[in-house]
Length: 149
Image (tube, rainbow, N blue to C red; front, side):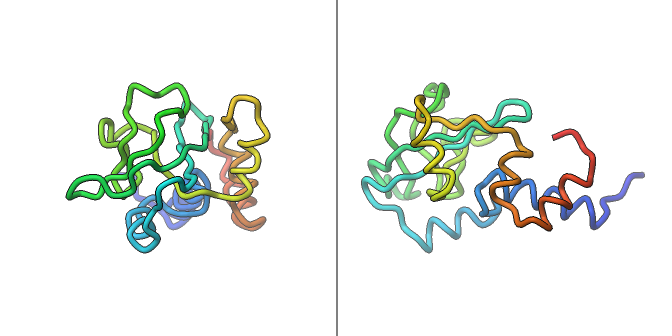
């Protein structure tokens, strides 16, 4: 039986941190409760295809819909419009919570890169987003694992 080693845990934790722009997915709900979103606030939508991430900027139109306090964003993001514009505070899409679509807090460096693009999207490989988000030591560790990402 294969066991999970410390290196594996660190590797996947760092990938999660990089893909979610510095905030691990398990801390997303706490982040949105501690920092309640506001109408008009910019947030980032992340989608994933294969080993690429697609980030786009959208704005919040209703920060606290219904009893569950769902976050509703402007519908103009990426090509996944069929998923809907409502997100749980955990960052998961309400209509497809198991999809790769996630609501993320605004990240200044990535946000600037998105705004400079003509399509209002940033298509980036996982190694490239790791290089932007992770520290040099963390990036070196992830790249030293020689895994397909």
